[in-house]
Amino acid sequence: MQRAIGTKNSADVIELNRRVEEQRANLKTSFEADTRCSIVEKGRAIRQELSRIKNRPENVGSVLAAEVDGLVQAYNATVRVHALRSSNDRFDALLAQVHEALQHGRSTMPADRIRK
Image (cartoon, rainbow, N blue to C red):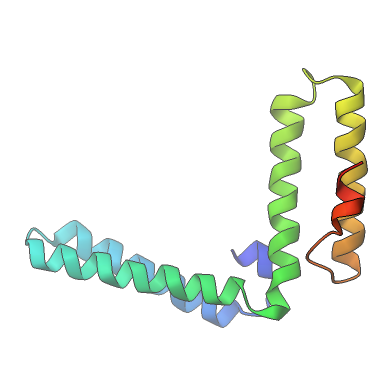
């Protein structure tokens, strides 16, 4: 997460990481069902806050870029060597369009550019 949004929200992310570590420590020492339910609820709240941070307008581009990077790494590691050259060329062309859209601040691509 920190890599995806950079330093813009580092205080928020540091606080969320602190809360996660606190709940991990609580989980290690808890044996009661009510305590574990409380930990689960606090974990859910942390996840929701993280989602809110990711979906802030100033973070959407960075988050999408990080997700695209992950997709490219996975494609290159598992698919590219087995795919037809035409499929790889198509993937690369679409990737270039995604990068262009991210540069210009558009999070969606027009359907006519995707379906060629």
